[in-house]
Length: 315
Ligand code: HEC
Ligand SMILES: [Cu+2]
Image 1 (cartoon, rainbow, N blue to C red):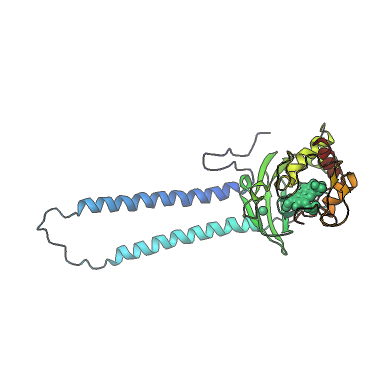
Image 2 (cartoon, rainbow, N blue to C red):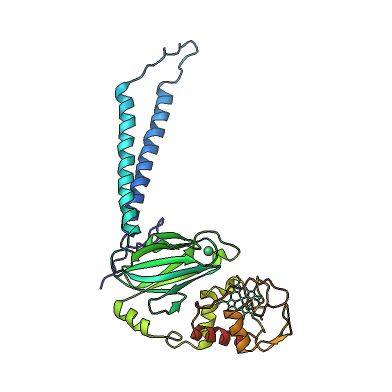
């Protein structure tokens, strides 16, 4: 089947959702309207400045010019009609985007510093938003900590994600492919790393994917863990090369003695690492703030295994 997704331009990313074209049409209208008035008004200013300039030292000023009802009515009503048209057009596009069609496929989105996770109707939690093509998908979004904002430029979808309250957006992706997700509300030191992906699959591929678990085809557990290290947002606070970030580097952690802020030292085995991911406050590493977020309910067991497997490779 031919691709329906219009290519991006110098100004705009590809139009990968059904209403991206409507958003861009309105944007283009306002843009060209501005170009038109900019040229017309600046042109008139330059033309009048030259035409009516003072031509000799003894030229007298024109007596006061009174008003002209026809011109004043025109410059009041024509812009009024234009802004009303923009309002009505914009409001319709906004309503289309705000109200998801009945029966849309629903996915819950959770934002936390500095990662996105996606919870499916059957309870599975993912770090990438996998969706079927040609199907309306409704996102019900909430934040675990502070204000974030969910932004998929290719879909022209953007909405704040707020603690203690749900916000929703929906979209229908036109073709299989991948699209980047940004956090577009500055939320702290890891904000620029708070990215994720929308993966659009054909409907049969999506159904196949819903039944699968474990690493993507042909990938080892440790490689999957390396992918999750960035995908699940750990990279915002943990390095893998020994350098300092908010949390301890993962280099050489596995198997080492960890000094705790309170209580005896602990050997970093699988159980300790798993506990650190699910209940980080139980054992806080000495010299670090207790700011590791809990991933309880955010990472499947298979993914925690993969992350631990990856940590083992960081000698
Ligand atoms: C917002 C910053 C932040 C993020 C994001 C974060 N961590 Fe942490 N992490 C910390 C801090 C701070 C500590 C040290 C304090 C503690 O032990 O709770 C820590 C400690 C740990 C430890 C114990 C390490 C040791 O040196 O003994 C593990 C394991 C860990 N994190 C795993 C993860 C994983 C896996 C992820 C991603 C799924 C992640 N962290 C995401 C901040 C973070
Ligand atoms: Cu954010």
